[in-house]
Length: 428
Image 1 (tube, rainbow, N blue to C red):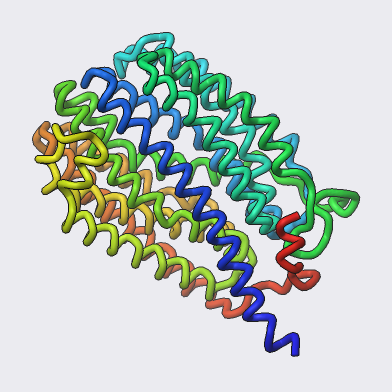
Image 2 (cartoon, rainbow, N blue to C red):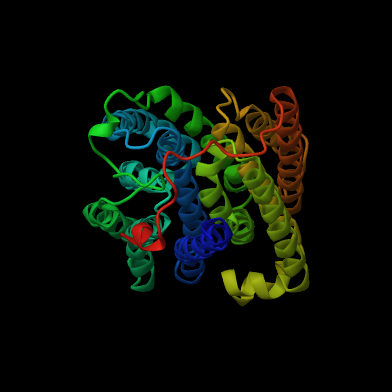
């Protein structure tokens, strides 16, 4: 009887937990998109471009946190109950040192005020520290608690800046409010993570961690490098627009990239749910993740082609509605990078040492073509970004397929130590 009901039970759990993570991701992305939307209405075009650039830089600087979460999730999926505090503190210390050293370079090259860059540094560290608990929850497949943690972190990161913009606090005041809220969210996130039951049926932490291999900084650096390549490639066109276009055109391009980020992050829940099972070499889950992300991307491109003017109007206001004809290209750029994202996570889960090489090459080519070949116009940068995204997704697909042929297919996941717990255990 259990053999008959187990697949249905697993499907029900996946639907519930997937819905919860989707809701948390939707809230996170919705709050992130609200920032430039409010900025377009409450800031000058120059400050809007600066705000979008700061958001891009925070995301890029926060790759240490994203890499830490991915590395922790993969390691915990393979080696449950292992502690992660030491590698978290090490990652945070290294990140802080790099950011402080980079302050003069950021100020001079991107023409941002010093106080804005200092706030940028402060806003990054909570993201790194929070990644530990999110990675543990993801690797343990406690997805309902993961959804709660994602929501808490999103509120901490974005509510402050949204409130500041709505109240007319300006660029610096809004970023300062975001900084304060981010640190307030950390202890709340720790409580939300709590303790519970892992997907293998054991305690989330405890004595069973003794003797297991510890997570090292090398694994974090590998995952961080891949995440950094992902973000550099997907944000490079926005930063290039800031450098190569006028302030007004840069602000308009920032509105278009909101559509790119929507298409990029809309299917991220698929990767979140699939990563622990991909770490256990579940090839069926891997193929399903590729298919779902591809379908989501195609649907978003079609929707943007049908309602591009409406999309630009919702994001930036009536002044930007005329740019709606470009919406499908921004959405296609995000869709290609979404596929690249799930492919590169599959490489990380399989233990690849250099999964990010194709993305780094794509980012470098994007910069070279945009600066020295393509016209320094809105359309020139847009086309260059779309071509780079398509090339990176294709290159990663070839790499993944070649790797799968070399190592041979794996049709079944590595068995768990104990059967999966009931849904009530996941909630606790």
